[in-house]
Length: 255
Image (cartoon, rainbow, N blue to C red):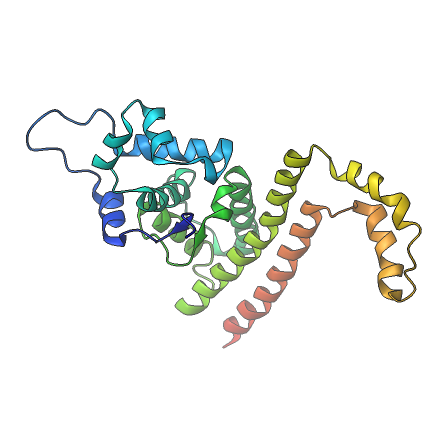
């Protein structure tokens, strides 16, 4: 079974730890470290080495406790993943700002760009399979931020949530290949340009006549940005989403 699944552990234990933390012992010595020290240590390991490097032993050693002591704080790795995901989601939010609805396009761009940057700073979040949300304070701060971006536009509650969901899905889709490109570059030692130069001589010998549209478009695109300009694609996609939202918002204003 894949361990890298958020929500595989006991959801109530995860929620209790996120909202209440560890209860101090009624007797005996106080804990050597804070609960969040363990969670942040795990996040640091994942940021530096990837999710596969995170283990309860590694985390315990990083904060200076014995591996068995880890379980007096967190039931296991499954719950640790929940805590990591929620905590990292809220680390960079801070105080949720107010947004001017008149600047909704700029607000959505700000949210989408910030979300993409978040995934590129913490690419392991993209690798962490998650379907059931970890509804801790970090996740709620992120959701509050996103909803405020689209508040005051005349949308229904469901439409507000769907706009946020659409932006999030697009941003994940834009960030994932960029994160994967970095991973491939690090694993192979080849830049995208080096890879192209390696295969280009052979590609020049291939008959592309069965693919006339690809033959016409491919060289133009390849000369412009090779394997793809991530920033160009991201900006293009956001603008098209905004154009679509503009139709919805204008329609709601006339209703």
